[in-house]
Each structure stands twice: as C-alpha cells, then as structure tokens.
Length: 225
Image 1 (spheres, rainbow, N blue to C red):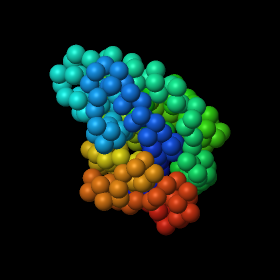
Image 2: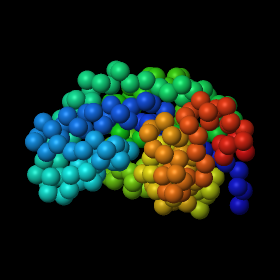
Image 3: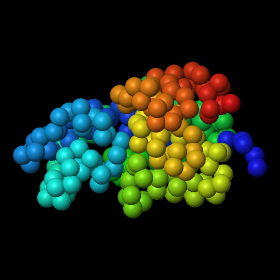
C-alpha cells in the first residue's frame, strides 16, 4: 500500500483562526450568567471540544443536565458579539494555498458552529483552496470523538486502512486524540495557546508555532515530505 500523503484535515479554531481566547471569554460570561462561574484556566483547557461536551467537562454532569442547553445558547449569543473581531492567523491563507498547490486534498474539519465556520471561510481565502468543509453538525459526536475525522476520510474517498495517507493539523490535544483513534498523525500548532509538550504527549508528531512557520518549513514538514 502506498504511503504517499493524499489529504490534510485542518482544524479551524485556534489553528487557522485566532479565536480561542474569544471562546474562553464567551464561555466565561455564559457560565456566569447562569450563576455557575468557572475558572478561566478550565475553560481554556477544554477549548477545542465541541460545545456538546464542554459544559460537562468543565462544570460536571449535574450542571450539564440542569443548565447545559442554556449555557450553550448564552455562549453562542455572546460569541456572536465577538465573531467579527476574530481573524485568520498570519500565514493561514498561504498554508491552505500551499497545501492545495502540492496536490493534496484539503478539508476544513471543525467541531464548531456552521455559522462561525462560514465566517472563517470568508477570512481564509478562495474556496478553491479547500475541497470539503465539515462542522460539528455533520456528526453525532464532536471532538475528542473521532467522528469528524472519520467522516473526512469518507469525503476524500479513503478507507480506514489508508489513514496513514492523511495528516491532521490542529492546536489541541482533542485534535490529536481524535486523529490517533483513527491512526492519523497530527501536526500541532501552538497558536491556540497549548504548549508543545502537551501536544507531543498527546501524540503530535511535530509542532510549529503557527501557520506562517508551517508555511516556511512546509517542504520539510509532514505535509511536504
């Protein structure tokens, strides 16, 4: 079986878009509105999970059962206020373009809200640079479940046994764990606020500061080798 790379699956929030800290602020306000404030460090540690998992992960099952849907609704309303203050990281458009021009299939695979993903697409350049776009609404279980990347494999026409011909680019341990469950390697970016050691301990094969550094080192990275 060929080991040639065929596709790259890009996380969006914290990987291509500078959004993670706005998410922390929005979740912080949402929990506080409902009388259950949470430490910001716990919120930051959970960013990258789908919202369907985050409330329980941060505040526990009792809060999820009692207030989960209300907190998520508040988070979306508040984050929508910040959405137009978010922007693509330097090098993000160039990274998608470089990957596309290398002949690789490009997939945006985000556990996020489709509306937010639509805004990100506008910031990330021409649609011709990505072949498929997937959001959390396309699967039953969000990251760190492997559903989103499993669907991405289907979209690019690869069987699970060919997972070694795909690379994920992400910024959180949830991206790495989701990919590892399918046998996919992950390149970690630090621009989402996670340390290189955390991503490597989760299983990332290499780490780079941000999209711009990955573009600079593209030829020697797992995307270009």
